[in-house]
Image (cartoon, rainbow, N blue to C red; front, side, top):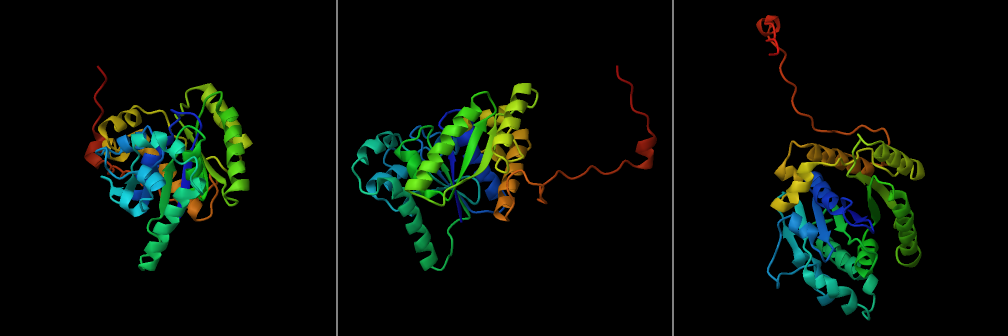
Length: 296
């Protein structure tokens, strides 16, 4: 099982969009996926249409009340994609956990307990991927996500300040490595909101690839209207606009992530299966000889 924390200390860079749609694309590819919303704003929860009454079990219960993780897991409209919702109460969780013993590893302990219970019952690993949507801050909630993860993906907007933000995130991951989780590493950088028509975007992406060789995914997530619209309908991009450029980007990214599992680094030349639309049949002899109508 791969557990991946999606992080960036800045909001609006495509982090939650990537958690939801990468999770959906992996599920579409036959993987069992759990996405966990650690952000008090609950954007991931809203994106998946999982709003719940105030007393509904959420990640708050797991972190603060000791609720078993399995009780907080809910199905989504996408087969194979499970979710743990966030809740507004999570905004006060850091204060409530201030004096808790082992407060940085509560989520990791809950995840490990779920895995062990699944193995004891003879089911093996409960899922293939766990994706943590960390909040755009580096507090206790993000630390729990990083401590529970085995690796880190960074969502990076291709703009001027991207490299400055990346250096800070690398420092944070290194700190978690030293104090809590020696095996934690940044294994992927996802360029988001990319517009290849802009020279600045192309230059920034080039600089990110230069500074982090072998970590940047080849597939950049383009700026796309359908991706922006999907959350308001409570749907993933694969449900809302399955033929859009945004859906194509996330399917391609999912194939790169699966190739990682086979031992390939991001950006390497690799053989991956990418679904393509069926080719149109060749024209018949009569069709081929029929002249095209002139433009009016």
